[in-house]
Each structure stands twice: as structure tokens, then as C-alpha cells.
Amino acid sequence: MIKEYISPLELLELLRPKIKKELYQTDAKYREDLEQEIIMKILEGLRTKKFHSIPTFFELVEKEKQPK
Amino acid sequence: MIVEIQFKNPLLKAFLADAEHLELYKQYCRTPNDCIKKMINDRFVQFYIRIRAVAYFSKIIHYTARHFDIERRKYDQRYVLNLDSTGNESKNGNNEGSITLKELIVDESATKSFYEQIEDDLEQHIQNPNLYKAIISLNERQKQILYLSFIINYSDTEISKKLNVTQQAITKSKNNALAKVRRMIDA
Image 1 (cartoon, rainbow over the protein chains, first blue to last red):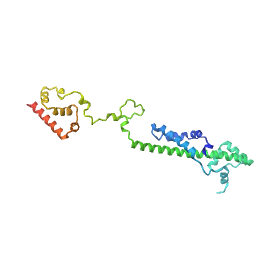
Image 2 (tube, each protein chain N blue to C red):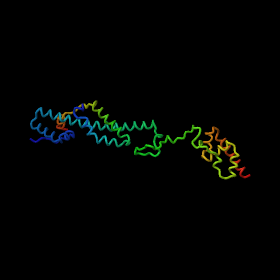
Image 3 (spheres, helix red, strand yellow):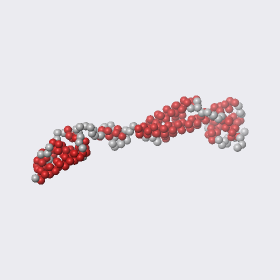
Image 4 (tube, chains in turn blue, orange):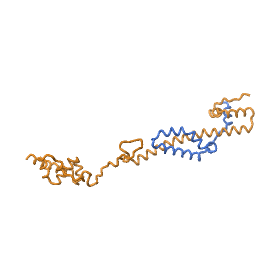
């Protein structure tokens, strides 16, 4: 689960510039609505999303060492 | 012992760009042991998931925003609020007290308009004595039609709607009335 590796607040802080950028493409009076919608979607994703096939550091190092 | 840290993989490069991670890795290369290996792996997973999460949620944000706009446009199209908007679109949101378009719609089903409710006759608008004499000799209906037509400025069609007759009938009796008035003045 993503939550175990990164706190929701920290993630939101990381995503803040991206959210701002997307807010500007909609009408000024709908921006607050959209912001809420986005944050809701993110929290929802945090609960449900799982990343599969996470490589380990040493796997990648081994790959790097193999001759191409 | 020289540590080989020239990786091509951008993930590894970025991971080792952190001094703490680099130090751990160097330590591991010098003295490989399971404890450091586990630490590096843990750090790496955390680092990796952060990147994946930011990338993943950036996409989510983008599509949420697009979806939101599409839905909003659909909603605006289906539930048109033209009549609720004020005529001159003021964007500062301070619309208090201004008139919305729906308040300007004329109620055509109303039997009497505001002007007609004022007790008012055609002859009260006449100054020329000859014309006045001619006017008062007209019958009530002709006077009414001339009043609506010239004082209130209704078109023949509007008058016909109001009096529930055809527009042709109105035009005809208006012309008759005018002809009569002209005859009286000329006489």
C-alpha cells in the first residue's frame, strides 16, 4: 500500500503545483469545486492503488552490470 | 577500494544522488552484509514508490480536471441558465440587486399591461382642436386601436393579440379610423 511509504499530507504537498496548474484550465468560479474533486480522487487512490512489480535496488544494479 | 557508481539507469542515478543513499551504498560495497543490504532495499522501495505515486497521481489529477470540465459543460448545456444571468455579465460576483433577464420578460398572457391600467384616453393626448373634435367622434373600439397604436406604439400584430382578433382586422379598422379622422379635418 502506498500509505505505508508516504503520508497523504506529504503526497498532497508534492502534488500541489500540479493541482494548481490543472485548476487554471477551468473557469475561476469552479476552481474550488475542482480542487475538492481532485483531492477526493487522490485520497481514494491512496486507499485502493497498489503498485505491482517493484524492483529491488540490487536487481537494477545487476541489470546495469550485464553486458548489453 | 573504488566504488563504481556510474549507473546509466535514471532511477539508480536519482536514488544515489541523495548523499545518504550514496553513503549507504559505498558502505555496502566496502563491506557487504545483509543488514546494510536490507536498509538499502527499504530506502529504495520508499524512494521508488514516491516517484511512482507522484507520476500516478499526476495523471489522476489531469484526468479528473478534464473529466470535471466535460461534465460541467454537459451540465451547462442541459440546464441553461440564460435567464438567471444578468444582462451585463459582471464577473466580480456582486450581482446583488441587478436585474436578471427573466425579470424582463413581458407577460403576454396578462390581460392588461401597465400602460393600459393608467386611466388614460386618446383624446387627452390631443392638442389640436380640430383633431380633437374628429377623435371624439370615433367609436370606442377605434379610439382604443388608435391609442394602442400611436400612444403605446404597439404594432398591429400586438394589438390583434391583445384584442383577440386578426391582424388584418386591426389594420383595416385602423385605416378606417384614420380615413374618418382625415375626412373630418378636411371638411
